[in-house]
Length: 412
Figure 1 (tube, rainbow, N blue to C red):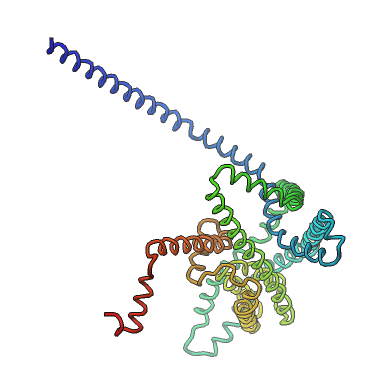
Figure 2: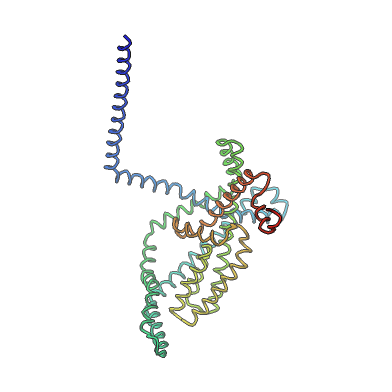
């Protein structure tokens, strides 16, 4: 009887094992069939995902642009509100009117600047680019003649070799300039894309208006959401971290924008006084590239010197010296005055942030990478310091080692 029970028990275990194997085999077979179907329809799935992503981008673009506009305008809004509130009791008692007036002043400045760019700046830049592109071959030939005449007087240097080297260095400039008219024409013809961006921008302006008008209410709702989904202690940490990140980003973005605008204006004035060719293009290049930390001034100086060198070589030396002085003024005086200690990163970390940001997001990443790294560095340093203090609550072993190095006779 006992043998029969053992046999029945082992038979049941074998049946369970066989059933488990069959289930696993069925799941594996179903997974293989599903995988084969997915691979077979991969192009359709990819196109569906692309369509959904494009639709989502089109839907969210005005809100993201509106948030970006409101985020950049917020410190200027606070500035004008303070001025209004200091000017009289009426504005202190009517907060809504003060807020609307401050927003409208910001919009007048932005819309006025945009109209000025469209009416004056864009045509000037376009005409300058087309003129430069049309004459670049003549500039190059004239420079080759000047170089040949100069080096022909030197017996030990072959002027043809020097010309070949310089022509190779200027080949990218020639290619870009020769393709510039076609590029401008392509941009002008693409009316659909321009119209779509214009509509999104107009919608973003209205969205930004309501975001700024009720920014306290939106902030309160966001805080309620955080406290709803997270424990109170963790919610406090999230809010404190968000506020600190906001200050790092806003101080850096607004400060760098104001700094680059001033540098661009100073470059335009200086290049005009020097009678440099195409001062508007050169000052735009210098101002825009100055937004990129550390590398930006050098990136902006190279095309300015090369373009001037192509047209007027003696003047290129003066332009190079002027740009160098402007960079030193920005790096040692203007930048620290405007930005202060907003990022608190040494040059090595700034270089790393610019390189990694540029590798992932191009020029935008080169700009945004610095405040991102500054935020990560701030929180990482605080975390390490907190853990270090928890591990050594009674004393700092590093300070003991430092004392021992300074006074080796005291500690044995």
